[in-house]
Length: 389
Image 1 (cartoon, rainbow, N blue to C red):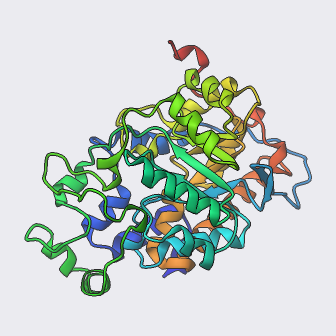
Image 2: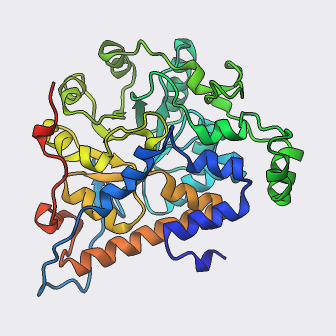
């Protein structure tokens, strides 16, 4: 079946075919009307390429530097939570797929594998993504464990003072741990293989969040486990304290406004990720590709800027780099792969993106990733003047 998946969209449909609707919608859905979710993808489609010709592109070089180390393409696998509920062992599968291409892999705080399990089963370029929890002792312990397990970087997600309102989850009454209810019974009954694995056997757990406030599944305020424990008081001073606490690379994820960049760079961050959490939290927020040029301009070359949100094609990677990104972080693109077929599916997703990026570079007359620039684009995104203090 994976052989028939020649695009990320086909992997998405394969994942939909094997998962109960409430589970697929948890991974696929966004906040409220899902405008930002859609706009992240559409922003790439609005950008046109202007290829050069009469250039030798018989061999193209996809290698790129990500946080000072060479990767086989300008991609890192971004943090995605609860993957094991879609495919048992999915976190390990994603990490292994990344390691095979020397790509960074970011483990989510809400992963279904522990910090130590990933380091043991999928050694490679490991990053740990930390949510800003109210329980500072727990947060400090998680950071300490990532340091002890030799994780290369700490990713601090700063765009989540509170959890978002995801109405697909509300409609299904979805909560963790998952339970069969009258509302979702038929969805699970139609996917017996998944249901037997996930609901009859010992279900997956989120070890980094064990013992935290339980999730309610009422229709008014359904949030993730982490979402009920975020710290809305987290500010620049608190981020500076984490910078002092962590001795290795620090990545700040969730920046879309250029006015936030100087403070983040000044306190010593090593990279910024332009991200709106895949449209899962604030709806009608700016698409990440539209926000990218202003963030790159504000960074002024002091730190690399990565982008996540909306990556579905290798040409999307090309466009992000042309607008100044040092690379991209995949979210749903590789997530759909692992949900469709575990390790094989994750590998398939990366192969698709790699092949499409190489093809785009050849068709645009661009022999190397380092040659990609704004002259390849026929349309710019939102200008700096669109942002006002």
